[in-house]
Structures are given as C-alpha cells and as structure tokens.
Amino acid sequence: MQLSVKDVASLIDTDENTIYQWIRQDSIPYFRINEEYRFNRADLLEWATTRRIRFNANMFIDDDDAIAMPGIAQALAVGGVLYNVGGSDQASVLRSVVDAARLPEAVDKDFLYSVLLARETLGSTGIGGGIAIPHVRNPVVLHIATPSATLCFLENAIDFKAVDGQPVNILFTLISPTVQMHLHLLSRLGLVLRDSDFRDALHRQATAEEILAIAAGVEARVSQPAQASEKSGS
Image (cartoon, rainbow, N blue to C red; front, top):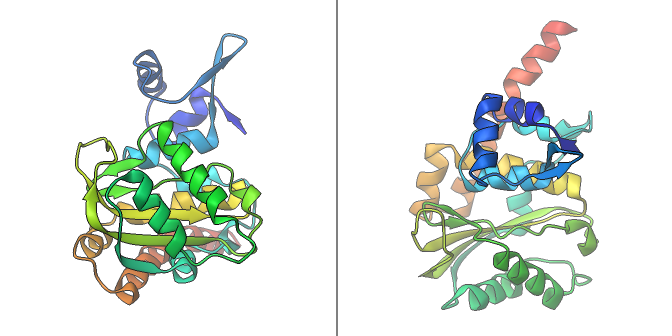
C-alpha cells in the first residue's frame, strides 16, 4: 500500500509541513509518482521504529482480524531468548544468531543469513540504546507456518553503526510467513520498546519469563482502549 503525505502525518501524529521538511532533508524514505510523494508502509514502519518515533501501530495493519494476530510476546515465546550469543563483528554475530535460532528444518539458514547480512548493507538497523533489529524484508519467502521473534543478548557489544553511535548488545530477529504479519510484529515490537520497564529488563538481561511477561502486559494495555471502544459502540 502506497501512502500519501497526509496518510503519513496521520500515522505518526504530526503535521504535513514536518513530513515535507523531512523529505527536503532526505531523512524519511519516500519516492515520487507523477510529481507526488508516496511512501511504502514497510519502509516507513522500519524508519519510525529505528528512530523511536511514535506511531499508531494498528493503522499499519489493513486486515479487520489484526487483533487475532499473535503479539510480540507470543512470537518471543516461539523464537526464544538467547544469552551470550557469540561474534566479534556484524557478520559473525548474525551467523551465530541464525545458527542458534529456533527455526523449522525447512528454513535454509544460509539463505536467511545472507538476507540479514544484505539488509545491513542498506543502512544500519541499530535503533540506539544498544539495540538492533535486523529485519527480514521479504519474510514470505521463508515459508514458515508460525511467526517468531528471537531476542539475543550478545556476548560482545558490536558496532552496528547505530543512530546514536553506541555499540549493540541486544538484537531482535523477526521471522514471519507474510509481509502483513511482519508489519504487525514490527509495529508491536516498536510499541514495547517504548516502555521503560521493558527497556530496563533488556539492559539488565532479565529472565526470559520476566521479559515476556512485561511485553505481554504492554500489549494488553495497548489493546484495552480499542476493546473498550468496541464494547461502547455495540
């Protein structure tokens, strides 16, 4: 889905003049069609997530049944939380992440590794605060039945050329069967990363149980207003 300047302003709760300013500064991903500015949803969501820009997560999802999609806490329960993941640079860390990830046997790990490595050449996925999210841009090609998110605490802090210049020691990898699911999980991850308790749990490398519980709590609080609105309108 291609978004207009007006759409983007609504999604991230800002004014259109700010969007045009970002375009002039070439600091937001965009393209032009017939002299009009357009935006790709996946690129915009990634851009907003990496820059900690607040956005309306539900507005990135078109399907009416988006609420039935698994949240980031459920995806982390599938993918797992890994500690002391080795590696001395981006390439070796990503290799270790792929090798350690819980993936169906049908997934070609060498292919996944090459996709993650290629993604880093397009620009840093370090979002600041020691965290990186090396996204899989075309998750549908992995042909998996269940989406997963793997959280890795790195043995060594690695330079990911993050926006704040800090080395990365916390890494999230999202694996999804469809682009729609990928967008949903990425938006949910963006939400929980804005929660101070969740970030604190990450930086002290809390237990997997505590991290998942905090994530589930954040997602539950986010869904409550929508549920209350549905009840009041029924």
